[in-house]
Length: 75
Image (cartoon, rainbow, N blue to C red):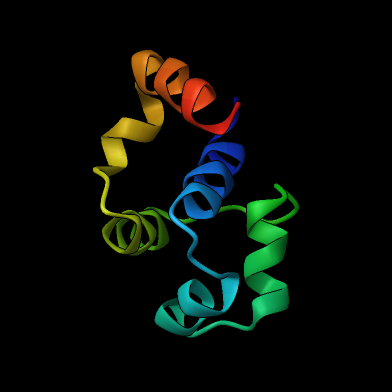
């Protein structure tokens, strides 16, 4: 799973809308959607903000074990 896919999966699992995250990032929902689909890059600063909203550490998104746990919760 790629970074943007993990972010999307966690956001959906926590029932948080793209609107909430885009507002915190001060970008449009369309811009955020493009980040979540991998069409635009996610900056380090954005990852920190998104992680804070989702209640996970940014490093979790790069942990292989997190990938396995995420697959189990979204399956």
